[in-house]
Image (cartoon, rainbow, N blue to C red; front, top):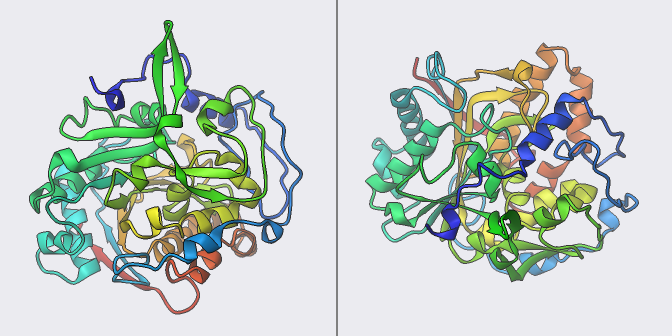
Length: 407
């Protein structure tokens, strides 16, 4: 079996279980303004943490990314500021987590693509972005495990749509940063036999033990550099792949894909959200945990580098289920059936629209007040930064939010 397809389900190391244990224990950290609580930290594990610094005072190599001219398909794509929203009240009814009613999901995706592009035939809508010979990556978010990760029927509807217009299944890869999370959420070769399932970090057996690898899957020529180093403990070190001032991009995005479909899951991350931009920035780079020290810049600036800026041509937010609290991991009491998907070429506009929905849900459920929501958006200003970097529309003009309801 190819290295990409080694199943890790039997690993004694399960990061998702560590994460769930930390969330269940109610682990809370007090952090300075501009930083996020890292809910991925396993309970009881310690590491050296550098003193917080003013994010805007930290030197980065963002100028090297901005010096590269954009292409005709670069963010925010052909429909800046436009977000297509499709709902279907019965799509998750009676379905187990990570699943939806197949025909309803496929119909929602087709409707969203037509609404986004203005095409009457969904195949023509897909053909605006992809063609035969394209190597296409589908970036999922499996952090929520089997309870709150990408809906398999939506993944398959995306794959089927690509195949229908001539993209070979052998040229499609379902991917994330970490293979154990990817497989634990059911994105496995067994469930997706016709396509490749891959990650930057993977497990390989050595001397009867599962060892985390990844150095061979990072591109040492393409990196986001900023002037903060962080030493990781023995748990985090393998997942971070390297230390130092550089976060390297995965070869998956620099060498192995021509175009990327970004498919985040609708969920919060404390008072902010983890949607299109965060799914890409933290999901594509090594040595990323230190990025929380300049999180707003990290999210926006990593996405400004050509491997993401010039390849992510479509964003489809999986909101068939969502969470308004407890994210980015999964807590059942805060999950609701939102029965919605969003399609956009503009990741900034999509994040803005979905953040508003989650914020209203937090207010409705008494998690936050309107004032706290507004303060959170000021504190976590990555959308402002991304707009200033030319990645999409947030405040510069009104977002065109197109909505349709199938049932």
